[in-house]
Length: 97
Image (cartoon, rainbow, N blue to C red; front, side, top):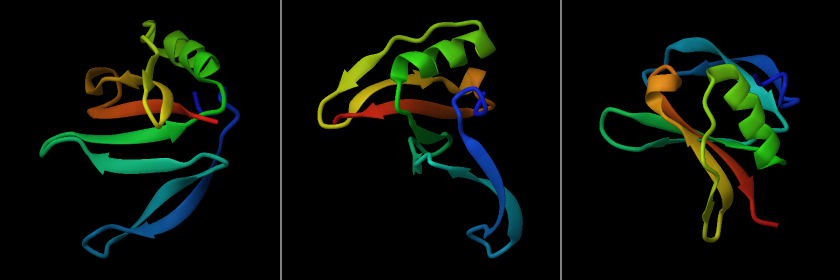
């Protein structure tokens, strides 16, 4: 899916909160914010240039369309629920200009 959104994932070494080294993906030209949504669920926000195109790509991968909403002061976004995203919320956000 990230390739279809023209995102380049680059292997990167990072440390966990416990200091354990792991290999993760650094995404070129994409801002990702990780945040706690509640005690048991985690979520990320993926910044996109075209929210409609992002929704088309995601819908083709999961077989479901998601409503696009407007968040005051942030921009337009849609959410992919944990049940479709391996246990975490994914927000796709096209920031306000």
